[in-house]
Image (cartoon, rainbow, N blue to C red; front, side, top):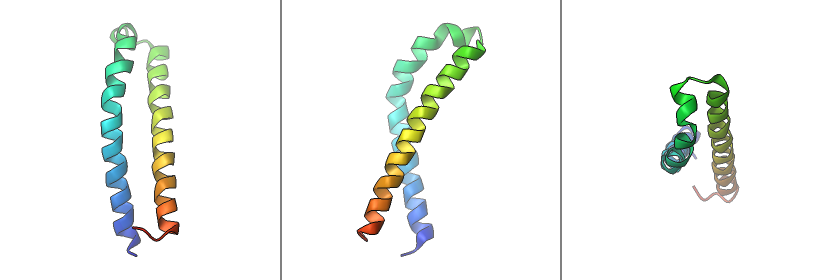
Length: 76
């Protein structure tokens, strides 16, 4: 029932899942933008940021909804 402890657990799970998720994303996304990274192209950097932000929003939303459904069931 300690909300700080639950928030900490959710944060650790979110960051761990994000780390594991972005390892393969880095492998596939970054090579597509090698030329833009080398030339420091602003549009390329914005595109990379948009891709990562979209994935992060989806990840965070999914994890937040999962924890909320568990809270309603009093599981954790």
